[in-house]
Image (cartoon, rainbow, N blue to C red; front, top):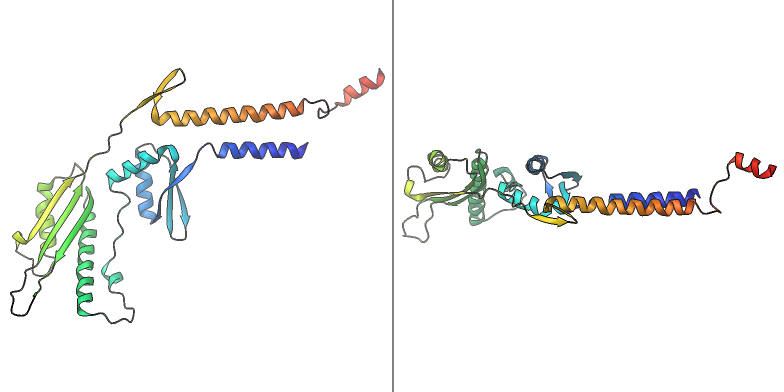
Length: 257
């Protein structure tokens, strides 16, 4: 009898645990990026779980919130793109690089550093910087001047007219040969589309409710039905004549008769 109860109890716990299914949303995140993602989802009333792995932090959400979570994080520019710094790119590994490889690595490192700095500005969601350094294409040809193009995706609250002179000055003083050449620098601002949740209503029996809430109540109904089914099976087994316990008082009464 005890073994039967343990089996039924284990089955009920398994059913209850499966009522809410979490799926992986992002992995290989740093602690800071994971906290930013969780905070953004919590602001939109989405519960997220954080778990640690060997290669970073894993963020999981309920399956019913997966689509909303993806759209919310995309609008917020999260998680942020990981960037390499100068120390990582020019790490000594005992391999001799050609001048062309060294130049390409330097240009990439310079663009990564500028992107990382611009991304620290409040309101900037995505920053991309494309750098062209002075170069002589062929002997006897004039040297092509330095140039740069900056792409910034920002929140609606950021004012491009206020930030453009500051970013222009920052980029011009960071790239060799670009100082004072405003015609060789292009800065493009693109406002991000704010996430606007479209409320959809669906019929749930005689009730009309939000589509986001219907999944929750559907899980509640399924879990409640499973619990009632398991309890009914337990009671049916308990009330079988061969399995009902015999109380001491009842035994004495039957023996006296």
